[in-house]
Image (cartoon, rainbow, N blue to C red):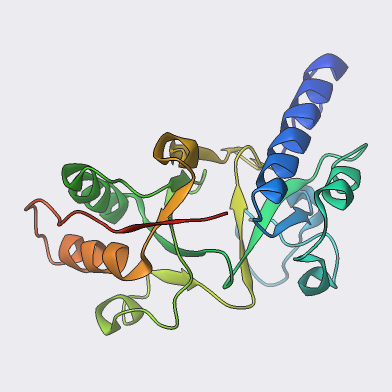
Length: 208
């Protein structure tokens, strides 16, 4: 969440950066959504101190094909979190940072690391092409979450309580290409099993 003590100039600059990122992703065909700030999210009956954002609008599924000009208006005056819908252009596999680091090493050894997002709660998101399913070895792990159809993920530079989402591996470093989901799934399965050998070279596809 943006610090209330930040000078207005800092808040303004952050808002401009958020808007620029949202518009840039929208022009590349990514289904961008405005997310509510964490301060607006509440949950009863638990003691969680960290919340992830949810879409700012209930009809978010109807917004996934919005024109970049519409996206620009969403990130105009208000500071939202930046979300992207999953299941069409891209999917994401969410893991803890320990498994994330192991899988990132294997992907790096292949010469084609996937775009990776790190969240303030120690969770990592590996972005891939959209998939119909994930391997049983991943689906059975309570600590692993597949973000596919009818779901969404936060992207940098979304402000959260206790931190800001950031890229571990930026998509532009790899020409805005997403690795095939099956290739990243295979690497995650191998990392889960403790395999430290170099992963095969991933096949890449254009995301936009």
